[in-house]
Image 1 (cartoon, rainbow, N blue to C red):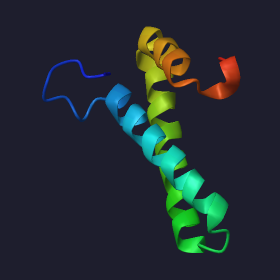
Image 2: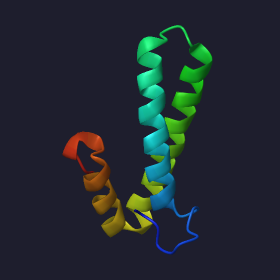
Image 3: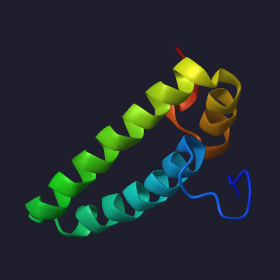
Image 4: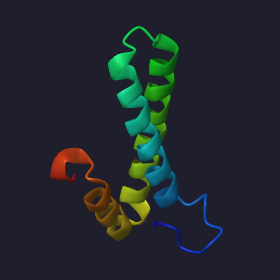
Length: 80
């Protein structure tokens, strides 16, 4: 959905979308497996990686940043 061209898997927009999907799935897993600390560490790493991609988009491609936040329903509508 967020690809610029068919083989696009490396752009920041696509990376944020993929990470968001993985974060959502892992969050659901951790709700039922509260003591799975190894997966929790992976979740924190993914959240930090997504945060870095969003920071890059905010700095260099603000139009796509705002569009992506709206479509993925991130940041509760709050935009810097």
